[in-house]
Image 1 (cartoon, one colour):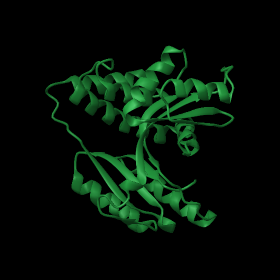
Image 2 (spheres, rainbow, N blue to C red):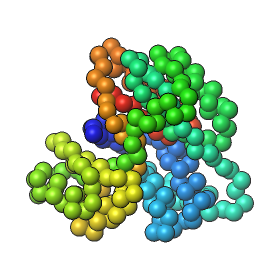
Image 3 (tube, rainbow, N blue to C red):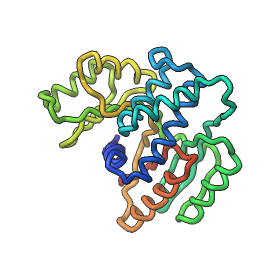
Image 4 (cartoon, one colour):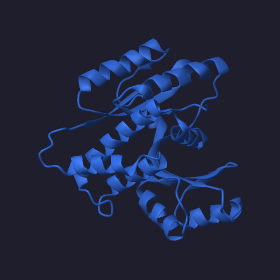
Length: 241
C-alpha cells in the first residue's frame, strides 16, 4: 500500500490558498450535512458523522463551519438531498481511476465527469470496470513529531490495536485497517493517547502502475480537474504519483 500521496494531499489542503480551502470546506459541509440527515447530530452514536468530523479537523475546517453544517442537517424543514454516486474509468497510460461523488443532480455530475475524462486523456468506463482493482480500507495518520516510539514499536502497537499494515515516512505513521475494523482501531489508538492527524475510509488500489514522468503529469492533471468539480468528493488512482 502507498498512502504517501494521501498524506501529501492532507498537508497541501492545510496550506492551500483560501479559494481552494473554501472548496474543500464546502465539500466537507455537504458530507457532514448528509451524515447528520441519515444518522443524527451526535457523533458518538453516528459513526459516519464522527468520521467526517475527523476529516474536517484534519483539514483545519473552522468549528463554525462544522456547526453550520450540523445545524443544517438537523433542520427537519431542509429539503436538500444528495446521492452518493461512484464513477469508474481509465486515465493516461491506462491507469484505473475510481471517483466518489455526492450530488443533487446525477445527470449534471455524469456529464461533467465524462467530459473531464475525455478532455484529459482518459475515458469513463462502465460500473464495475475498475472497482475490483481497489479495496475499501481504513486509513489513519499519526504525525511522528513528539512521539518517542520507533517504527518497530509503533508497528507492534497498531497491529495489537487490530490494524493490518503500517507505512512510515520521516513525517508520519500511516496505518491501514480492514473497513470493518476501522472504528475499533481508531478508538484503541485514541485511548492510548495518540492524536490522529486524520482518520477515514478510502479506496486503496490492490496494485499500482509505475508511469512515465510525462504520463504522471497528465494523470495528475486529470485528477486535479476531477477534484476541482464541486460534486466530486474523492478520486483514487491505481498509480504511483
